[in-house]
Structures are given as C-alpha cells and as structure tokens.
Image (cartoon, rainbow, N blue to C red; front, side, top):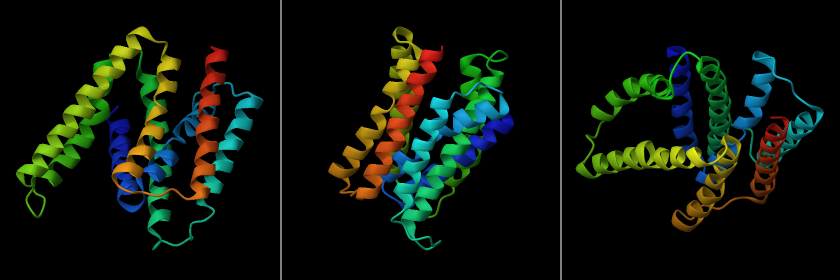
Length: 220
C-alpha cells in the first residue's frame, strides 16, 4: 500500500508538471488515457479477459495519442511535448495505482485506501510548501486551503453522494464531464487554444474510453 502511495505521489508531481508546460485542455485530454492503460494492466497483471472490441478501442485511443502528438516537435525543449509526455506518464502511473489498490480492496476499507493513497504525497509535498522560497503569502495559503477543501472534501463528497444512487459504471462515465469542463474553462478563463490535432486526437481518446466503459459494463 505504501508502494502504491509512492507511485501516486510521483503521478501527482507529473500531473502538475503537465499543467506547467502545456495547456489545461491538453493535459486533461491526454491524462484521460488512463482507462486504456488500466485495461492493458488488468489483462497483463490481473489476467482479466480482454475482448477483440476492447483491443480495437485501444487501437482507436492509440491513434488519438499519435494524432495529438503529430504536430509537436520531438524535442526536450518543446514545452507542449514535455507537458503532454508528463500527462501520459501520469496516466500510466494512475492506472497502475488503480490496479494496486484494487487488489487490496478486500483487505482495507474505503477510507483506509484513500488514506494510504495520499499519505506519501502529503509527507513529500508539505515541506516544499512550508519552506518554499519566496515564503507563501496569505493569498497563496488561502488559495491552497480553498483548493484542498473544494477538491479534497467538497468534490469527493458530491462524488460519493452520487455513487450512493448510481451504478459505479455510470458514475465513472459521468466523470468525463471533467474533460469538457476543463477544456471550456481553460478556453474561457485562461485563453488556452487547442490545436486541430489535439481536438481530433482528444476526440478519439475520449470516444474510445467511453466505449470501453460501456463494453466493461455490458460484460458485467
């Protein structure tokens, strides 16, 4: 469990790097390749059955990734390339943590899993926040605390409230609203612009993940 928590801490760091180097829309769309990695890891590590249709959907997602990357210069100095690579690496690690924690669900309660998922990240990142130079201002502290309350408490409260009345598969599919809302907000608030390649590639990724969810639900 602590190993999974360490992987999650690295995943969080890479996710933040993605936001620093590329647009929010790019980062979120590429990060949502994680269900694809989850399917591959489930078949490889947990010996879960994978159908031909699922393989075809994985191919569609891979096509989307290639399309999204196709207009990026292959250079470690290209910021979009660095950000999108960080996002896809974060997606892979997130899928890996899902597999790890899934294998431990019979042994731990939901609250215990959430605790272990975040404990290493908290211990690693808090010192950087406290001893940051320059010292965080009151505005920075307020923003950080507000983010924690909104995302860590309020958002998860809404999610688990909805999960109480919805099937898990339907609740998971609804989380793809994050992709649309993130892209719209980044455009309206920050003025981010998505390239044509990213729109087409992102559409392939989102479509494949939604269909993959439906495929999983039908099998269940």
